[in-house]
Length: 468
Length: 83
Image 1 (tube, rainbow over the protein chains, first blue to last red):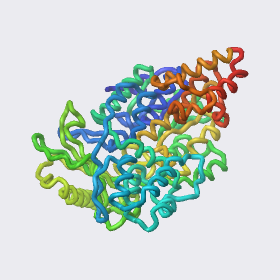
Image 2: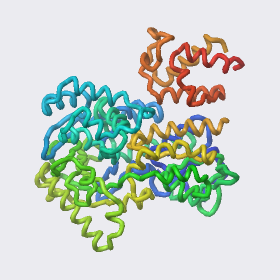
Image 3: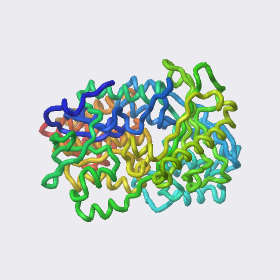
């Protein structure tokens, strides 16, 4: 799909959305359906933010389509359309393989209840109490209990159980055992509802359908439009500066990272010192590394599972997972059924990573570090798909630097901010009327489902502001 | 609007959110959330729809007033009397 350039845009708007991640796209759609005129600006030449894909040598690689909770079904129907909802399908084979245990699961409450009893010897009442406790957690609960304390309360000394419960969530949103337990409880319960789902047709199809829905609802989308400033005058938002001019709007929704929004887009001078003191406490989450493998046409492999949580590290450790040479990674396996219209076999290895470990390497060292990471992934992948090394015709690595380049996120963060970022994001319009933020914040509002639902929550705030 | 009209508006908005919602056995004094499988996002949809239709601003701290069908009607009656 092609979009107009910023030079072709005329007039002013009720809302300008800066950034087209799933939160920005959903917020734009919701506001246009509510009757507001919406302009959506994206710096990249493709919309979707981190819900993205790229093409190489006939392969399409999905960057963040690894599995989302069942809640996406209802959310996509309500805030997008039924055709999008109808493309959501379950991933039934989730594999864990590490020195402590190896198992296959549907990653649902029912199956985890069975596994915790049969494989880990936990009493049924303990398992049920644990699920009841995390299921009731909500944002307004006490934040002082950590996930580590929660696990110790129910499964004391059981590092194997802690790993089963935590490892997938650490990959899903970059959280650690030291985060507030409610962030764990909310995200884990979402997944445990009915298992893990994906979008049949791939990220490119989903984003194409969303862009078409936006077009039909009258949202104007410009790509290649990097906003220089959000214009704040007299304490209120007036519009955005982009492409050498100002486009007026009484409200601006920034789907840029919250740190970029405050420091660079609105500028710190737009905020009072009390807000900035709180803002300066916000820590961005870690970034990611990925290695992409594409099979030569005609090559294939057996079904080895949809999502593999693998590690050769003795125990779960957030620090180990962030290390450049981590031995923990997920493999997302894409079979021909992922894109029935363009059948292909691809594999994406994902690891957590720190921007600072990669940012300062010189050209040769960076290239060597990427090559070493590819080699480590090959060694691990061959344990599940023997001979894959000879089957691939494309291999490529992405690092925190890559994530930074395409998303502009501070330190290439792939999961937004830690918990404290949510309060800042939710209250930014009280500091500067007309300025809103949507995007991954607070761990809870992360991932595809979190981002879309947060887009709806912020759209409600914007609608309330515009109608007051 | 009369109490009956307000009640019908609420049910109509809920039906737009969830076409499979079953109102036959709905107890107007029990939480909508438990009976109709509504979540906090659904309540946000109700708030946004009421604002769109009647320019009605419901502050976040008053969302609990929308818990049951009867509490909705009771809360909205003075606000919608001229609509």
